[in-house]
Length: 110
Length: 117
Image (cartoon, rainbow over all chains, first blue to last red; front, side, top):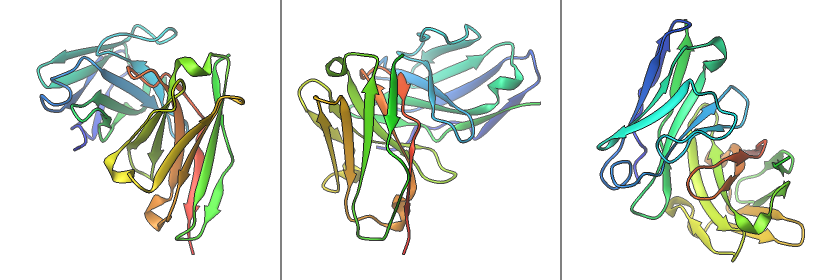
């Protein structure tokens, strides 16, 4: 199963919004509503930010939102803050019955 | 609180095996599965497999079929992952994560496995 396609990096100034795309195929992102997003700070374990395309776990800021259109899912961070600087990974369930991760996107707060 | 605590760092020689443990607490172990994910230095996340906390069912990524075994001990709410025939490119941080299959919502702290001669 090929990794999902994410931009290597995105950046924005504090207070701005940034959107990270996650492109797959009809066999993964497009075929199931089991897309999740993870935030990972350097040297730390990942943290679940979004599950089932657009749901937020308890405790995750509502500045984080998820959506999907066709074979592409997106994570939007609104009101960008310094603490949002991290790597972000998308993941999707696939027709193989297993999940696959994206290659990751580094978010830089300018 | 819900947490997963993993075993400590390991250094192994090529061809050896390693077992990483992941002890769960704060939730009903049998209600969730556990996924194992690894991250090579400077690289992204790679899903390795999943084991049910209820019926011992396992699903492995094709890449690891035949070389990885995942097990659980219900008496201690602990999941284990063994990797055999280690190679240098198995050097990575290995994570366990609680996985109800719609998102890995609790992660262990990670276990560094170094494979070097």
